[in-house]
Length: 467
Image 1 (tube, rainbow, N blue to C red):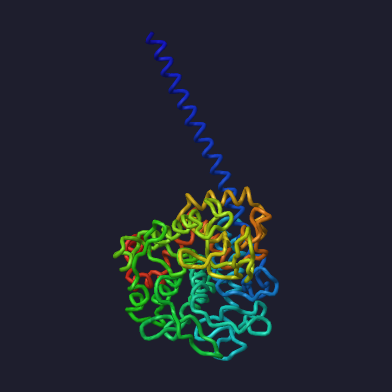
Image 2 (cartoon, helix red, strand yellow):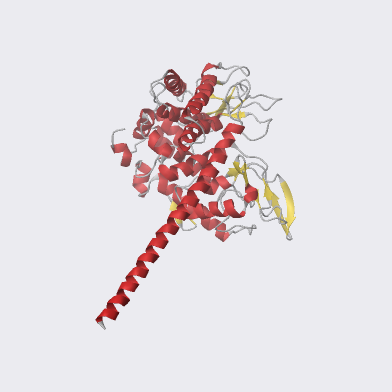
């Protein structure tokens, strides 16, 4: 009887062990499959920056049309995308350095000045849109009279700082990359672009001068203010950050309590995190609320996810596998009756919730660039789009947006024929930060970034350790 019992127990143990091994093997296979999927998706999004650049200047087109101007913000993402691509094997380090040197040379050799034409910018800030072939301000009738943009300059400069920290080899090309990137950073006159309280204005043009509006309160400008506070050549007032963020408070939407941007498109919770690891570091606002800005972005993403389930406007297709509102293209400014309901649709607009507009347009960058915050939600959605909605994935990555409500005759409905650099870039970077903290690790070593964070009152986490 004891022998039978022992054999029975041994059989159970053996079956349990086999089951564990089978489970481990399946997990290994699933992980390999996931890694292959991520590799392909990142490769395609990197290709946006390969396929949509001027071969001579290196400037990146704002969007994937031949008549598009170049976007300095898209260049900022490219300056991070190329080093990332060299690590993933999409390109070589030499080619990444070659591209970086070329575009930084363009940015540092074109003239700056107050003239309406013939310059790339003024006082170290850059025009939002440039002629990709000349590197000079995009003006009408070819494009439009582009503005000197503070936030787009910040995105460009952050990419340059990333390049400065990545290309550290002791050779002439990489030394020149570091020198040009530092020069770009030091030349930005944040103090000129702001008032006496440190509020940074939105824009300036030769035709109309400085705008009277500026960035005040939570937004993607977290990144810009940290850069400005990290400047040693054009120093901002000590109370700049407190004037910018000091009045922030928590609100609750869809069961999530967080500091919000009024319209709440998801890009405002993502752009600063493309380069800065906000986990476990806090300023006075976050110490008061008991959060950090990473957790704040996670909650904002969860609120959008729950909004999609609530779907208060009854748009087609919103679900766990279709959600995410942010600034993106739309089907156009048009009224249309769908299933007996009069709907209003828009073109490019900053969509969001709870206060922002919503016309049923879903932007892949919204959910996918939230991968580090909500992998348990973003990864299943990504797998669904990758396997079940192949119509969304093209040579430059996912389409900028789609709207199942606008065209009920197909599953994904209206699909944007274009892609946009400032939407493709965050997908590439944030998936990589989710996988191995690539940009975060590099930027933790940047002395100007650390100075900016410290002057803003951040402490804790990695900031308490030496670079």
